[in-house]
Image (cartoon, rainbow, N blue to C red; front, side, top):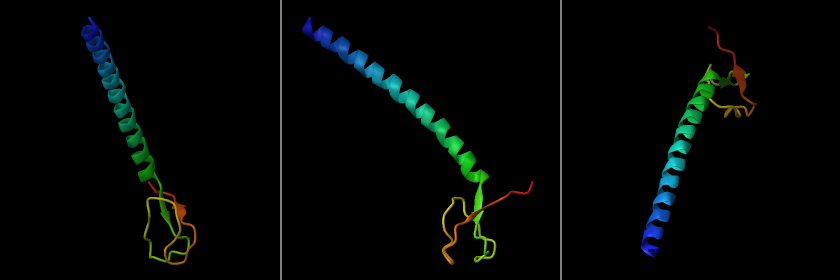
Length: 76
């Protein structure tokens, strides 16, 4: 009787774990796609153009002059 109860509890625990882990990975995948869209939407460039038009996909500082990179507006 104890073995049957342990087997049932174990099966419920494993089933719950699988349901939770599958739903989290799906949510993370859709979240990653959203981040990719945002990353590709913005590009950054040194306002002093130290590197002759070189752009970056993340905000930061220019490696040449140390100024904050400015977001470049896309022309469509």
